[in-house]
Length: 297
Image 1 (cartoon, one colour):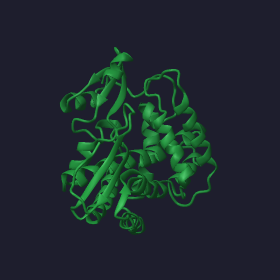
Image 2 (tube, one colour):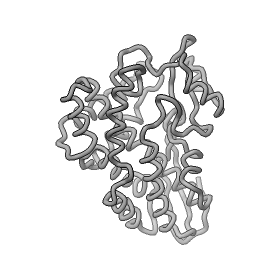
Image 3 (cartoon, one colour):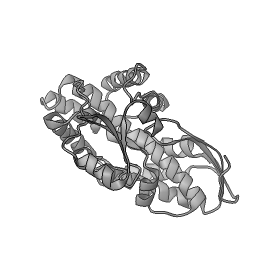
Image 4 (cartoon, helix red, strand yellow):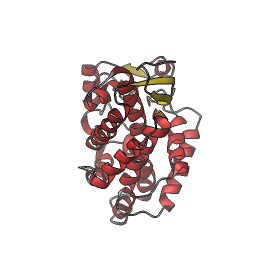
């Protein structure tokens, strides 16, 4: 919160206050720079682009059996010693993102997705590393042959006049980033909760973890950061997460498989956290089976 205040950004916290702010007609997601991103606009442009993305996400509701099997196989292949981020969350998030986009994502593609978030300047300062990473990813996605899925659907929407060139380019990154980064962070953190605190439902875990901690809005008195960590993990109102159903289904499958793999007896070592002001996640956490459940930092 201090980091937001240092940048002159007011902070709204608490579930009731956050819900009112998210639904407030006086606050907009549009900073006034004419962004083609779904996340940084309101009105007709937001409604039109959101409809395209929602159609894409609906194609994975319910999750295809082949994707469920892939997630279970990935988690089932974990050994007695593994890292919650590198070996558990990253492969699962990569599988789901590949299915969302309709392409095969290799390690380099996932690295570029992570670099986009790691460098993302949420305060609008002079550091443009995140924007550069996003542009490189957009170029890569634009050149990638795609099968049935999100990229093909975005290109079809562009050909039909539903998206312009900039909207096609940037919202491919938005779709990829949302499918991957939030899944990666949620699954790793939820896995840590399971390993150290025992069984919990996926809905309880997603609320406790809340991988996207804040959203930024703009009002007559300046920018406002609205906390989602007080029971609003998917947001509310016109910008509520359109992929919440897929996220919950993915978590249910992956975390059930992880709980079965852990078997109730494990030790967690070397827990390290990311430091991004908005996206909450683990950098690494090493799990060793057969020990006493606990955390060493």
